[in-house]
Image (cartoon, rainbow, N blue to C red; front, side):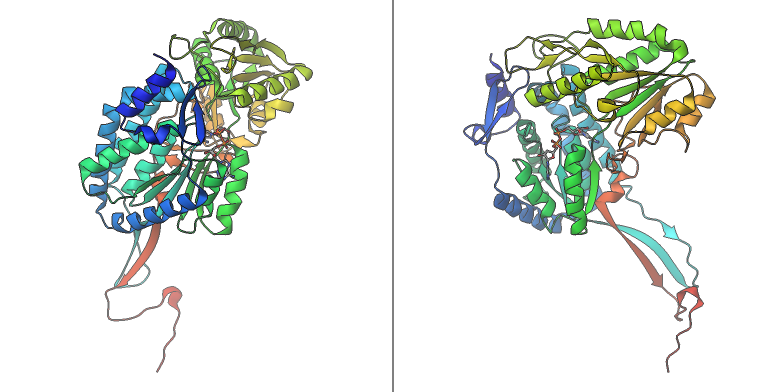
Amino acid sequence: MSIASETTALLERLGVSRRDFEGGDMAVRSPVTGEKIGAVRTASPAEAKAAIDRADAAFREWRSVPAPKRGEFVRLLGEELRQHKDDLGRLVTIEVGKIASEGLGEVQEMIDICDFAVGLSRQLYGLTIATERPGHRMMETWHPLGVVGVISAFNFPVAVWSWNAALALVCGDAVAWKPSEKTPLTALACAAIFDSAAKRAGFVPDGLLATLIGGRDVGEALVDHPKVPLVSATGSTRMGRDVGPRLAKRFARAILELGGNNAGIVTPSADLDMALRAIAFGAIGTAGQRCTTLRRLFVHDSVYDRLLPRLRKAYESVSVGSPLTTKALVGPLIDRGAFDGMGRALDAAKALGGKLTGGSRVGIEGPDAFYVRPALVEMPKQEGPVLEETFAPILYVMRYSDLDDAIVLHNAVGAGLSSSIFTTDLRESEKFLSAEGSDCGIANVNIGTSGAEIGGAFGGEKETGGGRESGSDAWKAYMRRATNTVNYSSALPLAQGVTFDIE
Ligand code: NAD
């Protein structure tokens, strides 16, 4: 069966009608072979605006549904995802090129966040606060916010939507989603799954999810819409630089989940077997196309010559191939643009004295598919392309001799998403996690930079945008907080002892 026919069969099983993915104006290609697998219809900015208006109308009903009942809907959404896990995971593999276990893992993450959100729907707690005035009570209440805009990147085409949507829905919000133009088919599948859960629930207002297929112009229509009080935007730092100020201009909230330039430190006491596996998965997995991919590695002088030969060997031997027909660990890059970007970064690194292992194109699956051997570059120092995120499998390795110096270098890049240290020395690990240590939103010990669980708040600092989504108390960004003071006495004492007596 061709990839296109398999895609059609999968989409139909997932409940997407043919007219939604055939005959449209935007071609969809699988990076596995570069072949066309669909043609979707894009929304015009005016259509996007109308769909957001409908979501706003749905929000006005949804906000009054009790939160645990909203959670019941998210429970059903999680059930539908469980039922469709294999098909949706396979579609992720076809549309993005992730290997099978990562495609399925992405759907598992969606199921996990639904479970988390169901529990949360009974735990949207506000504080009661001691008041300085007698006969008064002060408390916080959390209210639904409105239509939450979600802009997602190609590399987590469905999980990022669910991280935002599951929380937004239990918080009483509607969702308007602009998926990546590179991954509209998995988005249509999610919308169909959402519809079937809504049908089962029977109490979900029409239009609660608006799925806006299109490019940057549609994303801009979402960002500029006055009825969208919050936009959670995942993608490049370039995108965030545009979206952030536009939202600020109209005082809308932003959750910005932008690029990473993640690093690891291997100290003299590290368990090198463990470090090797974690580094390999972090740097090579998903063909280097995760926001949390390991891109820089600082290795202590005393272990460099033991670790590097093993790492080079791993790079030379790792299997690269079609994620549909082989069990290879490395699938394709998303497109020619990604391949060209990788070539430019490697040329720049070599010009600065970088010693390269791997990095060449693998000529399989035709001229429109871009498979590469992951690249390991031993750099004399941190400069040039090492300071930037190149969204491809390139790991820059540098030596260090003093941990304090390594931490300074670790933090000396624009992005601040994920980080890790490999050590069995308590002092080193605690220093790395302390205020003087890693400046990232995620700091790990003895695990790699990628593969976060949904239970923690996810996001990063500096040019990664500062947003947090998924677990912990990230839900608070999806609600508005009201401070309520109730006077149940018969006097009217003013705060701070102010007197203001009128006749
Ligand atoms: P991208 O920035 O090209 O596109 C992301 C999304 O933003 C797409 O839906 C795109 O249409 C939209 N967009 C682009 N410009 C816009 C604008 N001006 N206004 C509104 N919408 C706009 O990113 P990509 O290539 O799809 O994804 C890769 C990037 O995403 C990498 O930098 C990666 O690190 C980052 N990423 C970050 C996270 C995170 O959680 N921090 C997660 C995944 C990916």
